[in-house]
Length: 155
Image 1 (cartoon, one colour):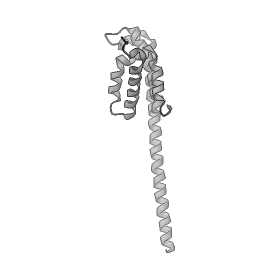
Image 2 (tube, one colour):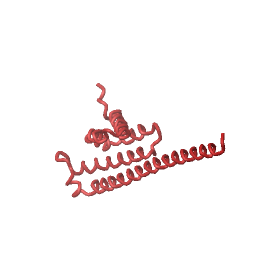
Image 3 (tube, rainbow, N blue to C red):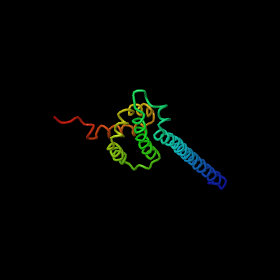
Image 4 (cartoon, rainbow, N blue to C red):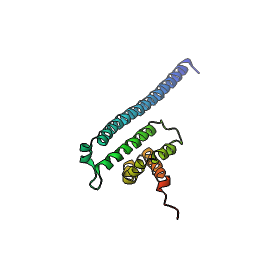
């Protein structure tokens, strides 16, 4: 192989390596930006839930017509806990296989089961098209159904 051919081949290999590294870096930057956006939006949602669940006058504006304001405020607190678990899951802080455990722990609380009974279907609709959110919703739904108080009493 001639020296010029070897130099051209080495240059092409270096250019290809640089392009691959650059593309990988761009994908990584995009993923990190998406994670930052997710955290920012979740913080806004959690702040809103905190205000709604502690301020009856504000909660009254959003309470469904067939529900008591105090009950709605309690359900919003449950939603806050579920949202915290959701963002932890989305950002990768819930280890593989641990989501069912955490979901079952949430559903040990009557207020979380009441929230899920009332708004679980809405959350499922919101999750449509987002594979990770759909999985999260299915796991929480299963935990709610598996809770002993959700089971019909034995005759």
